[in-house]
Length: 216
Length: 244
Image (tube, rainbow over all chains, first blue to last red; front, side):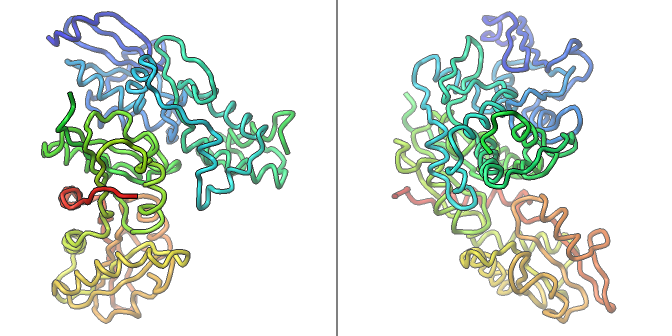
């Protein structure tokens, strides 16, 4: 028995995960009412491979997206193994929670991140403030991480997000072209990849273009 | 007290669109971790998580070596990685290695990949790089690796072709004389280019193409070979202290 695990007996949520600790095992379960359907091999590699794909077989480039496959679990014998699995699902989440709790988390805002881009992402810095607000609100609404860089405040156990991710930078880059070219929204096509923002039918593209008050 | 702990960071590109792009880097990290040479071995990506700009957040080591798992030297290794990693302000001892594509030991991996695809002493090997007309530095490591493979004498002919610049991979039959040619993609992953665009552009039938009694065979990506872990460790051992 892992003595450290025995001292943490109980269950708690982290993002879409449910983590249950007993005297002799730790169970990591995905979302859904029936966490016994699929047993995933309890290695970081297997867990990482499992969570890279959603229930429709689509790649999940945003680790915090609320699209984890439902009804699965993995069982670990030690807290160290559990930590590695959590890291595979939500990279850096544990480090960022700890740093936030200690008041040492380095926070970087969207303006700074966009301003430092070069190459094909340099244009993202020309996105209007309204466009930045809309892009971040749409993307971050579907993510379990709480954007403390936007001055949102995580509740206990929630994962703070200290800096806009590369997916948001890409989204902002495409939004610049939408502000310039005013494309008409199309129907959402679930087969279009999550981050293929330039492709008509992309859910985040069409939602951005459809919403009233969009800065076009 | 964390003094004396050594960390190794493998910095890669990753992808928002290809689920397999970062797989070789995670695999190399696991191999390097198993060797036990470093107290901490982590990964970070330009286009995946953990992101480059937060790469040091979970390290406890104060002495960290960064190895760019990139083929080319240039824009990414000289501008994007140092900036995103915040090397100028990280506040720890950082050693910054040359990219994987620059190390001489990678030539042995190219030779190995060619042999795995059936290349023998009478055959031609085409070292296939990405290249880009936008950055003249992009081709340098590919040409240097091809020269090392040529100097090894393992194959009758060694040529260099590119996906996105001249000399184009489409000219590989005209650039060689051997009956059998093995094209070895010097890419990090068996991703979109290696798995989809190159086979489609070359009109490969499976892993080969037959034309006028000659055969072009297609090897797996160099960057996915387990021997790349040795290249990473060699680069890390040679990495100089970062100076901005």
